[in-house]
Length: 362
Image 1: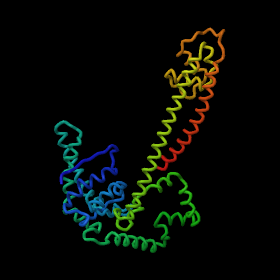
Image 2: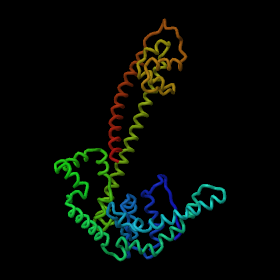
Image 3: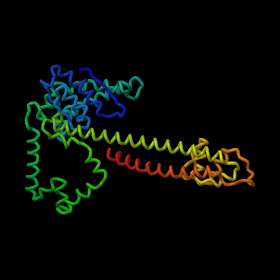
Image 4: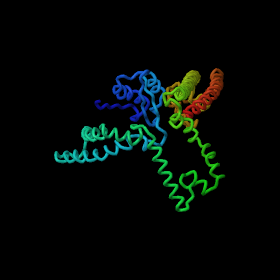
């Protein structure tokens, strides 16, 4: 098959790439694929390999997805055991040859096109039929056996023999046993409980990992795994919708609050007759008047500064001999604004808390 390249906005392997890989690479290799004639696709535990979209599509076309056990790709993935090892050496040689040719022409750097051209031969060699068969044999896929399991058991038995011959505690073979030997069983049993209280670990445990799914009957496309992924995806989408709704409520509340502030600002400015009256305005009235004038007052600025800013935006007489208090209408509007503002701030605070909690869960 010809090489295919694909990129997305994040620049990494995400869920949208998984279905494209199935359609563009897997299905063309299986022309007789159908739900009645299914095929098994073995993949590692990357999150893009068990998204709801990918599992739904694979169940529809007849692909049974099987996830490798976590932390075993260096043993159970043919690319790691064979293909990449062969490819890396030849690719480094091909790059040195390509760079030597560039130097002879006066250039000193390889372009992307040069790197792809250098990778073509090593890639075809590393993923030839010969090395595919070697890789499958090394991981026990063809011929199908438990070679890796028995190799690990043999290595474990050898390590146990070495420890026994040298009179070393066998519990020192793993980290948990080392902690138990060094600090005692009581401390080792308390540490996981303390670590579970951290917010980072709670978030990690709330996410769905391949360690929760790989051992389920039927593989990742089995009914049990599919229902788990579906429920988790629907819950995540519900939290996203809740965050969007909370954000919309906050924006709506801010818009209403700004409209009320501008309305009060119009009344306050209409009631002003002298510059001296500006200094007598309360802080909410000053902000409202500035909002009506199209000026966004910075947070934390003192009242005197806001008053001077408002004076510069108004054309009022400076004679304060006949200055009087603000009309009753402005005082009433100011009191109304303060009540509305307090109510809006309370609603906005609850929405912010709800949104923050949902975003933390995500």
